[in-house]
Amino acid sequence: MKSYQFARSTGRLVSGIILTFIGQAVWNMGQQAALLDSLTRNGYVDNSNGAQGASVIGALLTLMGLSLLIAGVGRLSKNVDLAALVAARNLEVEEAASIEATQKRVGPAGE
Image (cartoon, rainbow, N blue to C red; front, side, top):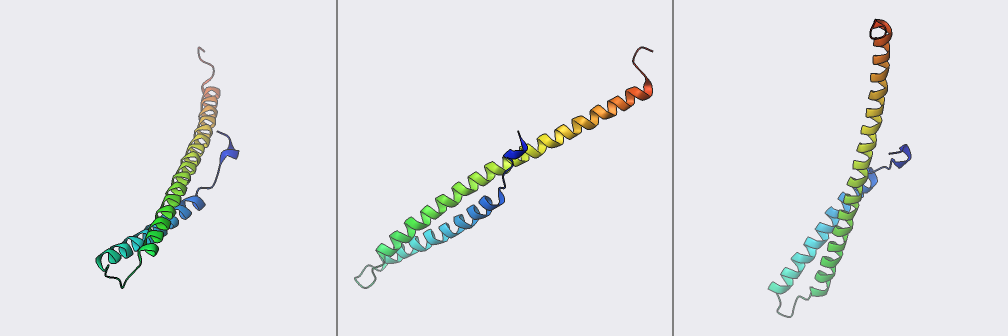
């Protein structure tokens, strides 16, 4: 992994969470309006078009939010892998330096 592969994930995660919650709220309102329309279908209330539209828009917003969440989690996992790789390389350098310092103190093996 290269350092240029680092990508911020916060924007996608936050946008995904917000869109998911808004989509669920709009979808729920559409479902409630459709239920109210079906229960009071006596010619006075006609919300079916608005209810269907709200349900479709809410479902689409929820799907967009979930896709942003998945993309954000993907970026976040790549960044965690990159951080672990950098930490492992730093640890490897420190271990090599420690071994070298120990060998200088003790002397070459076999003496």
